[in-house]
Every structure is written in C-alpha cells, then in structure tokens.
Image (tube, rainbow, N blue to C red; front, top):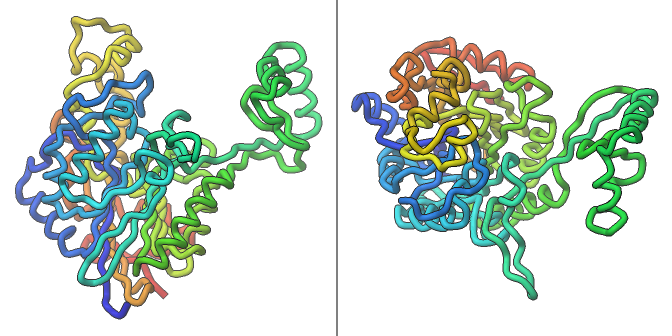
Length: 432
C-alpha cells in the first residue's frame, strides 16, 4: 500500500432534480470531486417511479426521486453511496428494493441497506488503481421496524437498514427517583410495562434501573443523561470493519445520526464519539457523519478523521413531486390540495423549519490524502446551497470563499483539539 489515495466526501444528498442551475458551479464542484479516487455521498432519498407503497411513517417528508438523479450524482464523480438513513424505507420494501436495483444499474458501490441484516451490514468494495476501499454504512435515526432482520436456519431475514441503536439513561438523585416512583404509583405510566414483563414479552430493565414509561432512570450522585451504543450493534459494526480491514487497503464508515447532546444540535450525542473511536480502533480509516442538516465538528483520532456531520450537499426537499395522504391529513389538508400547499403548511409559508436557518444551507467538502494508511493532508472547501434563492431553486451546491463557514467549523472543532487554518478561502487541518 505505497500509493497515495485521495478521498472526497459530502453529507446528505436529498436530490430530486438537476442541480445544474449554474453550469460553471456544477463543473467546478465536479472537477474537485473527480480529482479524488474515492468519492462518497449519502443518498437521503429513495430512487424509483412509484415502485413502493408509502409507509405509514416517514423520515420527514416521504422522499422519492426519479432514477435519473443517480446519473446526475455519477456526473459529479461519486462512486461510493451510503443509504442507511431515516428515509430508506419511506416507500417500504418496494421502494428499498427498487432503489437498490437502480443503484446497481448505475454501478455505484453502496452500503447500509439490503434484503437482510447480513447484506445491510456487509462491507462493500470499490477497486481503484490506487488501491481497494471498503464502505460500511449504518444509521441511528430510524423507525424501529426499519431494522433489517437476521437470517436464520428456520426463518428468512427482513429487508431494512443497518442499525446503530443506542441506550439512553438518566441519572437523578435518590430524592428525585423516589418522586418518580410516587408519580408512577399514582398513574398508569408503567402499567403496560409491568404486564409485558410478567407475561414474558419484555425483559426486566436490569438491576438498579427504574423504568418511567419508556425512559430509564438510575440513582446517581451527578444528575445527567448519558447515551451509549447498543452492544450488539456495535459488535456487528466492529466485526464488519475487522473483516474489511483484511480485504481492503482503506475502510470508510458512514454514520447517519440526527441525535444531539442535550438540546445542542451542533454536538452529536455521546454515543457517537464512542462508536467513532471504537471503529477507528478496529481499523477504520475515516468516519463520515451526516444527518442533522448542519455541520458538526471534526476530530482527528489516532491521526484519522472523524467528520461528526458534513451537513447537506444537495437539499431539494421543496421539489418533491408527491406526498401520500398522511402528509396532507397531518396538516389539516384534503384531496383538493397539492404538494406546494402541504409544504407551505408544514413550514407555515416558509417562516419556520429547516428552510429559515442559514446554517442548514452551508457546508464543506473535505478532500484528504492518505499514504500507507496514514493521513497526510486534509483540506476543506466551503459550499453554500442557495439560501437567498427562491424556495424552488434552493438546495444546489456552489463553492464559496465565504470564510464564515470555515470560521464556524473552527469553533465546532476546537473542543476536539483540531486546528483549522484558512487560506484563500480553503480550510486546512493540521496533521501532526
């Protein structure tokens, strides 16, 4: 593994149409991405022509895009696709199977979902002149029934996503814990759990853990909330990395995570750093995070990059072509209303929601080089997605020299000990 390999990555691509509003900008970004050997994006939509029934639940809007958008991603230069996220099963198993079929048709190496848990969690490999790259993808943000099922001798598996679940636990004083117990004894918040445990349909929470509804409480000297990765999901991830490490020069891990630390959306929940560090300890060369629709900090752990969130690369939620009846009914609309009516109702005529926050429409594209498994260079190219454009034109990436985006990333990365310098509108992370 003596050759230098160049990597590029972006966050979420919620793509529903062409992004070539500005052909010059499209060409500039495509040139940047195509200079990389391995180029990753997260596909945050299903891709098909109504080839699946809309689910009763979705990841927000029901995300469906025409298959031709994959050609557009191909033109940018992407060759690695993660698609484990909170939209993967918006159109149930039909949408999942169709999306996989089109990803294969357009010859992408993709990971994170499949016909069963083994497929969804398996490393996928990209062969390049500079070496072989493995991609593993998982998500912590999903509806419970979206989890892929494991294959058994006596039962087939279930299609779905590769999950990275987590456990949340609240520590409170003995006095507060007693107050919770008194409240629970007064109302029926724990009644169903008690019956389920007695009948064997639910396991007891464990020694010293008290359930208050679905929330787990323990007595603690320091009152706080902690999150830790689900041990079975973490083990499966680490096993996949160890396998990929033996079969490829480089291992990339994609994590789709909306979960935040407390009410601070700029910082990922505690379990995310635990997972990221464990993945690198097991042999991963980079962790590519996305999900919250904003940029989060960057950490160099054992001289390997952890991008806690790369925000959005393409974000065209306002030009979805259809939504199921459930979406309209939620906002009090009926069959005479159209998609534009529903989207305006959701956003209160675009006065609330993701569309009004400028940081949702700003991000970076990291480009980094590795030689013999070691990071040698990491550059950050800021992009903006048309916040000041009409709503139907927003969401298309354009390179920018606005240093404010990189200055924000400096602030977010400083707690991890990461130093970012800015020169000629490009960020550079110091690699010691």
